[in-house]
Length: 325
Image (cartoon, rainbow, N blue to C red; front, side, top):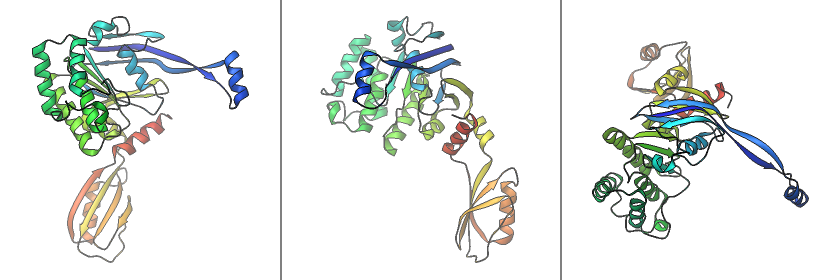
């Protein structure tokens, strides 16, 4: 469905020292440096997949999205999406895609949301029945009924993002590009957006490419991740594989009846403790969680036990360290 082969893209950036003199000099004799945003990036994405496209700031994520959505032209490489080359067949290509940039809006600021939707209907030439059906689905699943008659400038960030996602799906696209869709949203709005993405992926088989720094979004939505750093593709695999590779520790929390003795178990580190509870970091290379629980049960009258994996953010940090990005 999406085939990207050896994409490369560079930008010229003006170099200038501080000060008025340097500013005047740069007007007449500018000096440039070249920034390589993408270097031979290749991947394939099948229909119905939700893929997390991750990497640190400046890695090349947004540049990739802009190229495969037809906004930018690469220096070299190929891209085939549903039979079209995005930057060569833009009119036909954009009929099949929806794009949401978390920091940019496709809605008109001073008019009600429904007016923007009607204009997008005309731009994409959406048939009346299809537009009506899609609007009803989006209104119910994204809870837009009270927002459609409100000017965009009067909406909160969370409300606007829900409307932005609705706008990107009015023409029934087969592919949805989400670039930081939950940036700045509160917990309720984030959950609403995540649930909606799951719904359209399951019911309409919409392929989703998600770029974000919020690893909870990735964990909630994507099973496959593609890691990019310094313009290069570094990793393409499943989130489960990533967790298994870097999940060297588990967090063990135990509640028990009151105890005044010090607790020490080889292979574990005490994170915090009190007279009635203890939280341990268990090194899985040295001891199994079940063994740690068994040793604790010999010393304590256990009331409750919980085991948690390392937070996904910590795993991603380890991943970045491994690839030195």
